[in-house]
Image (cartoon, rainbow, N blue to C red; front, top):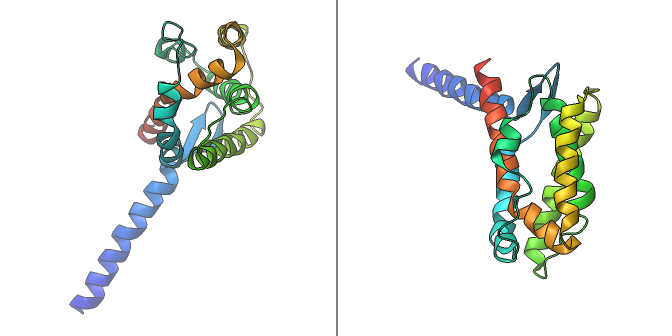
Length: 176
């Protein structure tokens, strides 16, 4: 009897842990939910981060300031995330290059993960306020001031900001 109880208790704990992992991969964006496994994003990013930061020669330029992301208006999380992912998929990853095969694989995996999240967000029908669009337009303007490969290096180096924001969104959604 003790063995059955012990097995049941272990199974209960395991199922609770697994359900926490599944839930922790969900972002609630306004009236929509999407899956985003930030631990995987972090794993891929950690493989390319040091190279991207080391190759960034434009130290005085900042594309993604933490204040920019913290200033996302209420109800605009879905739109802002959709536009940031679009920026990274269409402008950054398509111009980011590494000579090392492992880093190429990691950046491709990261780009594919962004495409997947972006595909889920398209189902959400996010409404974008003019202020959110202006914020993203300013991001594009700063990106365009740099040479394209350098801009892509800088944007990859600043992915920490996006990943921290996604992790904060997950933390906020768990407490709701």
